[in-house]
Length: 91
Image 1 (tube, rainbow, N blue to C red):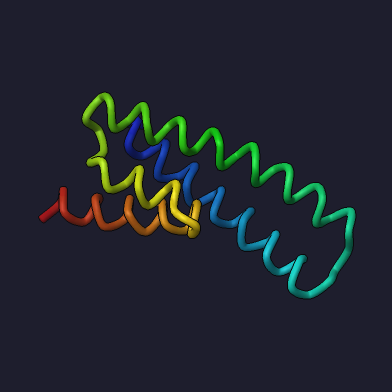
Image 2: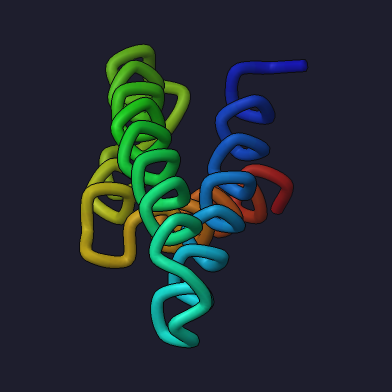
């Protein structure tokens, strides 16, 4: 598995955690679940930002991927940016 594929997979996983957090928060499904998912997302997003930064420095990703990762969309923005980058590589 390449570095690009690993970060792409991790970004999708983090987007799932973020989506679960939003569902629990908006649905009022439990303070404990919200707390746990919030911590997992916060720590996971920090690692995702570091992984994307390392990839940008190694020229694996273009710099706009980092901008999308640290945007308010967080892991969803990173996933979209990585998918766009992946499709541009194939074409």
